[in-house]
Length: 167
Image (cartoon, rainbow, N blue to C red; front, side, top):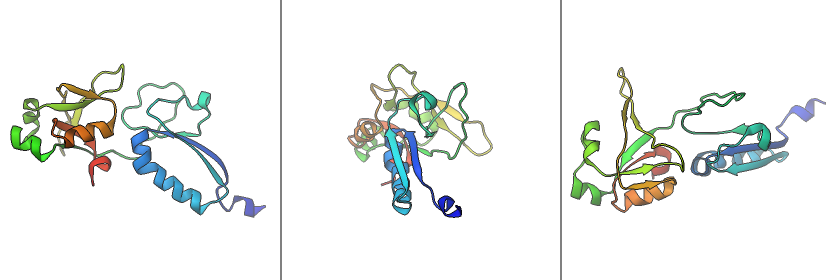
């Protein structure tokens, strides 16, 4: 009887954001699946907010603010470091922002999900309140890879997760 509890087994259904899941979570879960052959994974990589009970998920991994979801128990497991980045070609033409206030003088490549307001760029400094900047720019995209591509192509500044641009 004790042997049946010695390793994870059964089905684990997890939903997670597409990009974060692909870059950060899926590699860890695949390693876990290799280690435990009795573990069955059912993974959904989607930016759609799933209803855990209705859609039958055991776990939802999300980035950003949760909002008020009745009946959902949420725990912060990590912070996502964000960085402002741009192509050298953009910086040669427009100059490099030296402080947060300089961002207002630049074109931003803005992340916005359909039907949602533009999210502020947040800058935390030790011992000071978080500073918010509402980015302005003529490019609004709902795909992080497309934003990274546009930034690499010199279209403006992008505020992206470190895990996406670290390489």
